[in-house]
Length: 392
Image 1 (tube, rainbow, N blue to C red):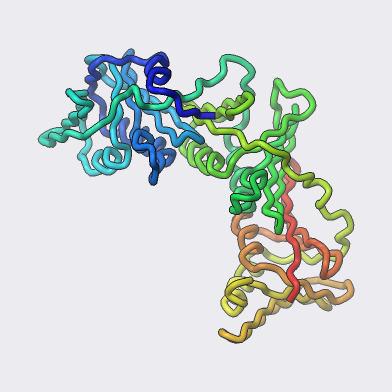
Image 2 (image 1 turned 90 degrees about the vertical axis):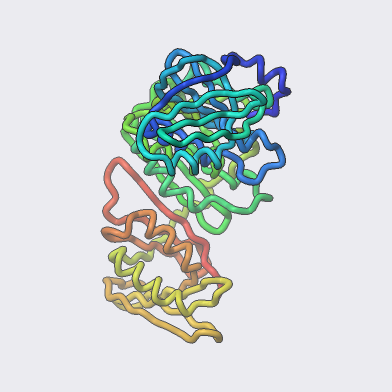
């Protein structure tokens, strides 16, 4: 947990405090500012949280951003003429550096916390704030970190993050549950109406005995996802303590306050006897749902899926906009079945699997949860999406 440290505590954290003076290439600086700026609190009642903390020492510039719930610390090489620390308005600096041409930038701390930035013929001074006001940020633990495959985790986040609840009151549903075992890893997210679950096998995670369950907040997952998309590293390090989650990717450390509480027993809602199924091309299904959804009730987004002899019909109607029906021919030999679903929820799943290949829809009856999964999923990965039906 990133606590609001008192100025003295923050100042006492091991950091250079001299009159910082450095020069750095625009490309290097912009790359790190881009990584850190999304953590900065946009609308904050605590002004220092709108700033980056710059710390320069040993030919490195370290940049820290925090919103008290999470923090990101990143660093890059720089020519350090004078070690020191300062804070700079994050949004203003980021927007300004983007507009500068390539080349060297010199940054210097002046009197009254002003920061001078020179590049070519541009000379700018920004109003900073005292470094002592910047809250202390948790340090990555010395021991106990687990190594996780970057590509695997990134894929798991993209296949579950959309199913996390947006309702603040449903606190334990505001994140995804990561389940690590010695030879597999899984992630699950639900908002009470739907559930996304992916499990990957053949992932060797040393240091895990039994299983380790960790609830990761949605905001942290979004940040993690963009860090994983912009790294060339194959693995990341993950650690936690009583209050904080830590992720180290290359030279960047992301921390997040832990979500407290018990994630629901999701295994109890996984369908066991959905014995009616139909297999369709993902692309065909997506196109049909998108067309029909144009005429669904705006508030509920509800559409009907009707399965009968060798065809799947998708339809919707609303008094405001009219009605629409699409038919897909596909083998089906069970009793006819009509189920209602939220069209947006169906499309979320189809987008997550990349709208390629075939998808299997499995049902029990009109009142029970439906299950969707990629038909051609690989041996080392099992992905499923459970959706509660709507009464139409």
